[in-house]
Length: 377
Image (cartoon, rainbow, N blue to C red; front, side):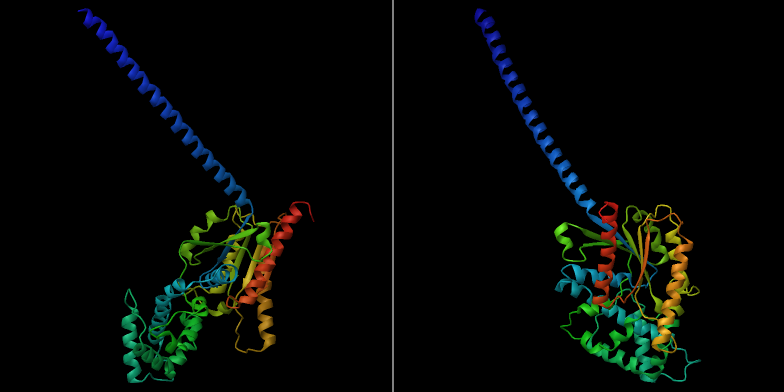
């Protein structure tokens, strides 16, 4: 019995010590886990703080405008000018886009040819090619452009009736890049074809949603850590609801206007003139309550092309449209908005030198404003 009584307490004592050891061990592990979690939390907070500080140096730019106004071309130019450009994989990714542009435009021109108003008649051979293109144009996926198909498209393109249709491009929603791609059919259909930078700039991909790019417009800014984040959003009507949440905290808006579209209608509404749509859109942007923007830049991306191409008439057209947008700006901006600056630059989205100069002017304007706000000017 004694053995039992003495053994029992000893056993209990050992058991208790063992249990206490386990409890102590668990407590140490719990404290270690807490320490590790606290370290991770501190690291996260440190990163958030660093990112917040870095964000203060980033100027937010919005690229706005109606559809087909040149926004996406400018966006691609920024990548070429101020980043590393397009690598071979990115260039190749545009190959199906360019081929689709060609096939779509070719089928569209054939479909738009009106025998009742044309003084030319499409040859029977080219009519067969046109019907083949129409069938391709109705597919969900376009095929790769082969040499044989390219030769057929070129034959159709050279037809006098199709050339007459192309001359009415402003009425038929024919894009500016059509002529360029049609004149390069042989190169584009080569089995080893890789799109060039110019091909990519002219390729049309309708912007949906929001895309962004971060850059520094002039080299010396990199030393001061001053960078820009440019947002591009779809310009068609159904995409514009996505603009609202982007207005907060912007440094500048670059509003794109294509002067060459003065006699064209919208892709989504053939009864609405593009220039009038752009003017109304510009006024809508100015009236947004959350839109406290110190700089509005109106980019003129394309030269006006009147009936007479005389230099004097082109200048008059440019000055006329410029004046209309200036009037619209001041009519829709409160007189006490003294912190706003309105500038108009005339440029073209396909000219890298002009685009670079334009963004340098934007950069200089914003830097001067920042110095003024800091009391250094």
